[in-house]
Length: 163
Image (cartoon, rainbow, N blue to C red; front, side, top):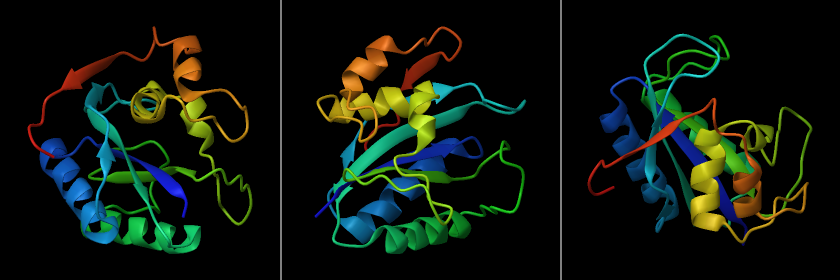
């Protein structure tokens, strides 16, 4: 059964949408391991700041089933994937890792290449799975975070209470 890591982000009604995203994933997948929540500036466009975290869970569902569930959760919160790549988001759920699988076909990007680009994905991922090795680089996630140049992507820890 693969261990799955999903990034949750929002910059529209952030606190409520983060809670909705966590609750929905918990409904589908049961117990979740949650990172801390971080606030960050919008990347790639001018917009409101985001709240982001990473959750982990085990599942027997296929990657394709997981993608369908994630899309349904986003759509229920008003997310439209037809829009611009960088834009405001009510709820953004990105599958970062699906076990040790590597897939770059049929629109799949697993492990998500953004892990190595964005502090708001890598830091919370390393926080909850630091000993885990990245399926492509073979480096531990905490090592990748230590090597990451985070001077241009500042994160602020946020307390949202009980998630």
